[in-house]
Image (cartoon, rainbow, N blue to C red; front, side, top):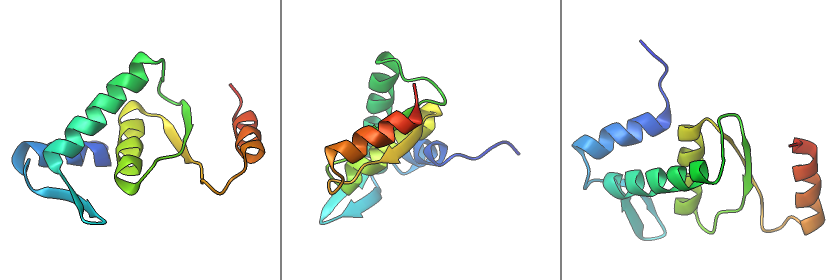
Length: 102
């Protein structure tokens, strides 16, 4: 059996249970189809912007559903996501980015 990745499961569920809830947060529901569409659109945009496998992504997501979309898109592209808190200062974020290297 091959390697199992969570974004593959989202795609599988989107084919068979497309209108079922994938995630619910603060009263907002995201179906498997919507999740798949969001993840694929973001992955295409990131790839078009030059993101390659092994790249590190430092970003802040506005809400949990955006965070999940970003995590799955990074997984799909073979990138690593490093979360940034709104409580971190700009200098802390710059330091983190500098430590990651090019």
